[in-house]
Amino acid sequence: MEAYTSFAVVYDTFMDNVPYEEWGEYLHGLLLEYGVEDGLILDLGCGTGTMTEILASKGYDMTGVDFSEEMLDIAMQKRTKSGHDILYLMQDMREFELYGTVRAIVSVCDSMNYLTEDGDLEQVFRLANNYLDPGGLFIFDMNTEYKYREMLGDQTIAEERENCSFIWDNYYYEEEKINEYQLSLFVEDPVLSEKTGQDICRKFQEMHYQRAYSLAEVKAALEVAGMEFIAAYDAFTRNPVHQESERMYIIAREQGK
Image 1 (spheres, rainbow, N blue to C red):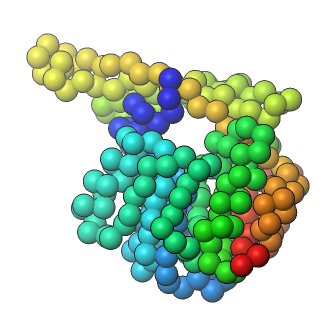
Image 2 (image 1 turned 180 degrees about the vertical axis):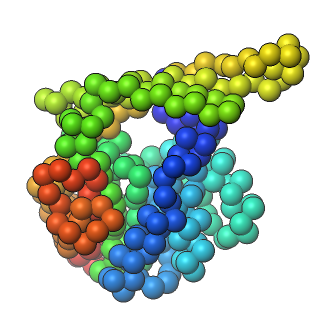
Image 3 (image 1 turned 45 degrees about the horizontal axis):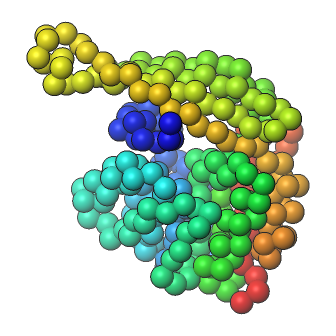
């Protein structure tokens, strides 16, 4: 079962409690702080394009990369509605290719945690270093091991909306540092519902896997890839990452060109 296929259709519905605008302001503030006021930016693991659209509204020339065709379909619907000139590419972030270099790369909403195999992180960092302008920035977030172990692991989360609901079972394997998500979706079928006069739902199932990385592991991978580590923050603050940080923001810089 592939991730973000059936879920793509209702992803934004279930993410309606995420303060994307506030997250966007925080990310924009980091970009400005490090001198990226305009120019080309890549949103790596862009999903349905919500953050891509926010940054486009700030005046950046945006490209979005994601491996889910279904998620990109929704992102392109948003692009049509907003009128923003955004280029979307369906690519695996471990193998992404651009037409040239960019001033910055951003990756948020724990997209980087989906890099679960040994060497994946270094590979993405190498590609980022290659496609960044000289001295360009890579800003990304990650869920922490604390969050998986103490908050998500072995927990079941369920939510219900008007036309859909989900059950989300989490299992954290501490030795492998892998969090397994078993996602069951129940989405109303409007055609069957109208035909029968009853609320008829279809069930879909997906499996998601994310890996926890320590800050030390991230720094080591950046060094191997030839990038310069700049800073790491407890998410949405300028405070250092601490033992109970749930999400961390990491800033790295291209070097070598």
